[in-house]
Structures are given as structure tokens and as C-alpha cells.
Image 1 (tube, rainbow, N blue to C red):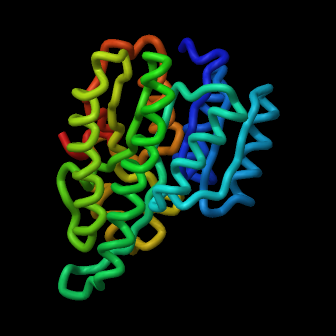
Image 2 (cartoon, rainbow, N blue to C red; image 1 turned 45 degrees about the vertical axis):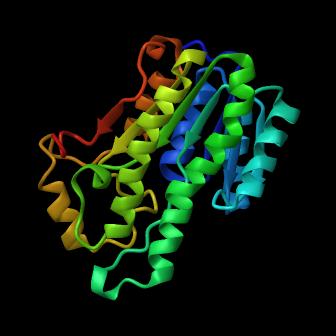
Image 3 (cartoon, one colour; image 1 turned 135 degrees about the vertical axis):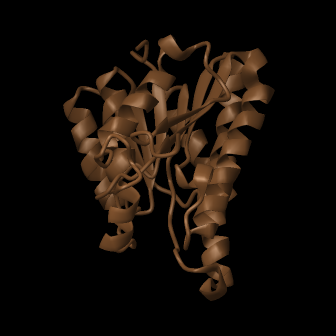
Length: 247
């Protein structure tokens, strides 16, 4: 995959999809930086990465705070030497019907899911531009493509992330920096589906032509491909990893 000796930062890397992505990139040879609001869980992932023979930097960061994102990128470059790939995976849900949704439920989801990706990408672009190489991979969602009742805030944040991906891809293409998005479908047991009822989960599963939910590794394989040399001519794309749910 061409990741030997390169450095990747995975936000929200303490569990689920983020953990699987971090381990996939480490297995491909990358040194890893992880940030999460639960640093204890992220440190456990860091030990798994170090067991693979790779370096790992773990930091507690709220990506919605731009100053914290800026400091994180400085620490990654300062301690690991460079930054080649950024995976914007950090995300939260605050599900409710629109009539019952509080201002803070809307604001917090947009702040973390969309502004967080903006904060990290803006900071990460600086070292990537100097190196004239890089990969930015944003984790969006099938919900950002087709919507979902009770998740208007989450859908808006993930749809916004798709527009952000395409715009940034156009800005950075001349510097050999690619920007793509991966849109997972139904991936249980990752924390992001914890608030959904079993009835809702079963209804979503019925929409999946492949007939099974996804796994964190399914998503991680797509991210690993986009981070590698084989994807050098792919930018501005949204890769759905959803079993055909949104086709």
C-alpha cells in the first residue's frame, strides 16, 4: 500500500470504526496518531498498534475546538516527523425527531462531525502542502446520502461532509493531495448505533441487499485502499461501504 514510514492521524480512534482504521493503516506500515475524548480507550488501541511494531501517539482532543486541532497537528508533526494521511472519523449522534430536537443537540452534532473535520483538515493541510503529498479521508455516512428519520442533525452533518470533501479535493489536487470520503452503512456495535432501537436497526437491515450489517473492518479496508498508492488517481469521491443500501 505504500504506507511504510508514513504517518496517519485517525480522529475518534478509540473504538469501532476508528480503531479498525488505525489498526489497518498500522498493519500497512504507517505510524499512527490517535485522538479521542476517551484517552484511556485510545491508549489501549495504541498498545495494539505498538504490538505491530509501529509508533503511536495518543492525545485527548475535542476536534470541535480549533485551537486543540491546531495543537494536535503540531504535536503529530513534531513527535512523529510528518503527516501523510488524515482520517476524519470523530463523530457523535444526538437523535430525535425535529420537533423535539433541542438547539444543543443540533449544534453539538454539527460542531463535532462537520466543524471538527474542517478544523483538523485546515491544520493538516499545512504540512501536506509543504510535502506536496497527502491523503485526507472523511468518514461520512449512508445517512448523509439518503437521510434518516430522527437524524436530521446527523444527516445534515454527514451530507455537509460530502460537499466539504468535493470542494477540498478541487482545492488540493494540484499539490498531489487527494481528498475522498467513505460512507458506511449499518455498522452495529460501534457506538454510533447504540441509540437506535432494535426495531429501527432491523428496518435498516431490511434495506441492505447483501443481507448483513457491515463491520468496522469492512470500512477500514476501504480507507486503507484510499490511503495507499493504488488510489493516487482517485479524488473527490464518496465510496459507499453499505452492502448496497444506498444504491
